[in-house]
Image (tube, rainbow, N blue to C red):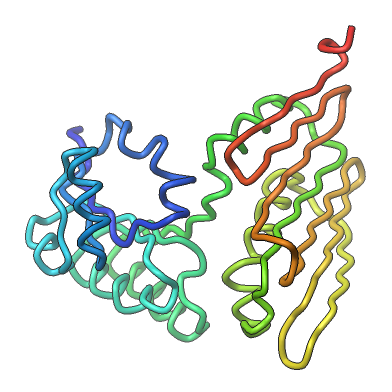
Length: 250
């Protein structure tokens, strides 16, 4: 089997943090081009990595890619994904597929009708530093996980946006680590129609996972802690990791 012809649509900060470190090095991919709106940023990708860049999806679709990675803003997902699926292209799209359940179902049905893959991406699963932290517990179930994802002065967004577009990362990451969840406890603090903070505790028979978000903290900040079996891993802002184990302390 030859390399998959791929296109990347709408790369931004999250793409740069979670995907860029490995996606350009995948031997299985032949990247046909990168599509975006910001010509200046596109030019930087072209100069640094040597890929063709485009501002119109239609142009690169004509090259008949096998698959597309969609990292554009959520409000543009529906139109982009629909166009790709109608063109017979497999799609990997950052969560959520859309913010409207009817539109999401429509895209799922379209993918099924055309026998295409429509995969929803939770990028923290693939973030290199998170993978490194999990590797420390290979074959072991972490006993305690704590994930904090705070925002600065971001109370204005709706509850729907906060849950579907942001806190969903916390829930998915914790479920991905803990696997089987037997009990859930949720506490929220609202300010008008907006969500000010949320805390979630997920429990299984051998693990506890705690997820916390405050929408008006001192800065945008993300931290993941994984503890158990004489080991601890702490990842700061998906960029740096600290590891402590009983072996280190011996």
